[in-house]
Figure 1: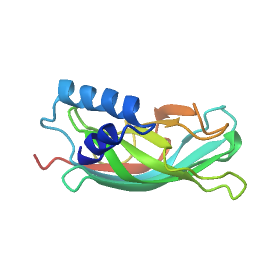
Figure 2: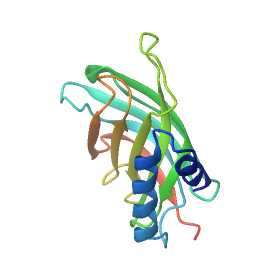
Figure 3: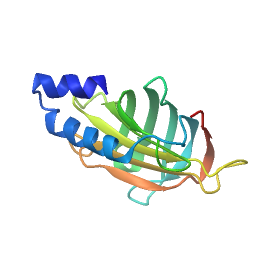
Figure 4: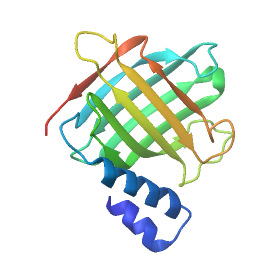
Length: 163
């Protein structure tokens, strides 16, 4: 939250995105859902021609998230960190925005690239019912505008509600 307010004050390129995310977070609230979520696995590629793999760690209380996401069939490989804003109001889900960096040596990284992720754990045991959604904002193609969402087909997400 502090980073969003700081970005708005500085008037940099993040102003509109930061303001819109702040408004959504305030409107939705933060009650009774996952405050920690960890896991990894795979889902279908965004283009339907392979697997997209991921590993994530999210902690709402510490304003922290790290992870990786690769969809080789779509030419996307990123690492993300530094939560910008988080919303843990959806049941069994963790939604957050984080800065991302490409893992492609041929693509120049910038500081204003965002990933918006929603990871949902449908309970234990296993991955049945777990879902992941990712949207990349900023950066060059194929990163800018990349989206993928769907069920986890292998691996597992583990959510913990601590509120």
